[in-house]
Image (cartoon, rainbow, N blue to C red; front, side, top):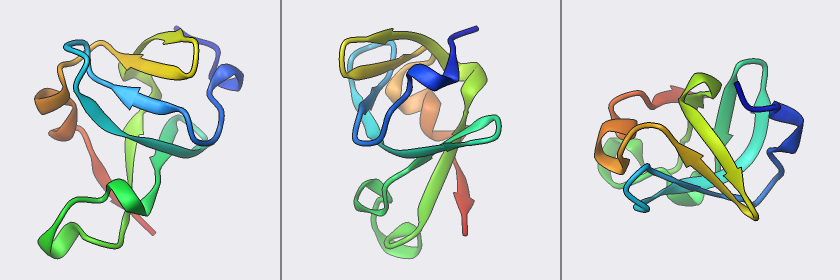
Length: 81
């Protein structure tokens, strides 16, 4: 598992396929909280979303690469307060 302390604010989160998934707001416990700017549209707009740290495959410079593709990673997203 990747060391969560390496994940910093404003890092880009990308899927295994290189697709943009979001931007890190912060790490909270065992989840990465994404910025509201990457919350999507409709009922999701303006809310933070989280992804489980277990999806992180690697830290590559200023990017967090997930083990799931961008589309699959979205199915793991949860709304956060």
